[in-house]
Length: 465
Image 1 (cartoon, rainbow, N blue to C red):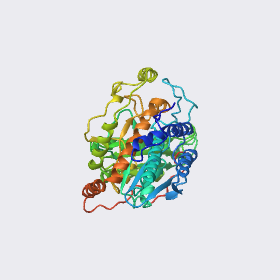
Image 2 (cartoon, one colour):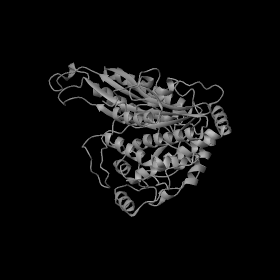
Image 3 (cartoon, rainbow, N blue to C red):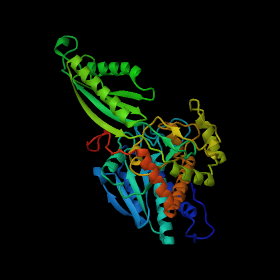
Image 4 (cartoon, helix red, strand yellow):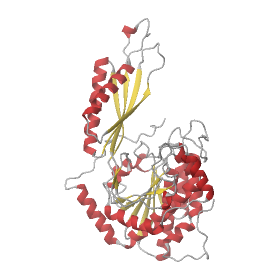
């Protein structure tokens, strides 16, 4: 469906960034739909990454590929001199959430992945905005540089952390990003820090009936660890989150499990608290191994800092979002939305809220994102637009469904317009960059020194296998 505005003339005023964005809208929608169909998991997004790179290269962006030892990561640059604006572009999908662009549950491919967090829209909107800003730079002759960071594996893979650790944000003055959602908001917000690990227990196999005394159960190790961590929940800060899944519980009931594995996430609004909590989970694993006469291997999978809000930048983006306005549905889109809402459990937003901009106020989110690490290194600002039916939770099939329709496309184009307008504002207002940098310096504190929570491990390129 065509989303871009039809212009009265093929000539576009050089200073009109909004028209430059919308002129590229239809190509951006086509790109998003292509990535939606690919639905590739973290660090496996070969086709998705290639599609984004191809569009950037065609516009004359210089490409660095395979950055930070990640084959699907890239940095695309355009322009020179002046301020450097970084724009983040995500593109990984989630496992098991394949869904057709329909308002009832209907997987496109049973058991396959789906864009349940809308990263197909994320990447496509960011690239669309970057292309339009490049057009603006060329037509105006204004100094400035755009850098698009193709960041894989946000969903549990911490792709941006490896890019940050490699120093690739060091020459960037400010970073813009956004995220699909069910409302329009540019309020400043923080997230939780997050550290995760796989705990693999090794025991001794034996016949569970005729020779149980000869075996040592790796699954016992997992279960004892889980019991101790669940007891620990009474003695952690209230804003902590600890969750796990057993990823390997053995092969057959009549075999004492030789190997078993549990995968833990630990979260808290403060990074130092997450480190301490994760160490306590590690101690529980070691104690469980000792008590069950098994051994345990511990692999840190990922670690993210909390997002550090930048109020200076958030106010700019909020002003621009209010100037652009929200999203209106057609009759067909309203019909789709009403049908889909019947499948939601207690939706927290009313149908029609996609037309409004949410109040400007600080929000503490309990989720986590690898944008956090970037925000501690460079002044960073993010926002959401209504790409999903109001009240839709992230990581749901309902998000996949709307993200493949004109409802998702409209939110994506609004996001691209907002990045474009805010990016051009920042290119022309160095005083805002200076104020945002000063705010970041104060928030970091005098003794801040960045150290990735995941340590010096290599990117887990096979973490979705």
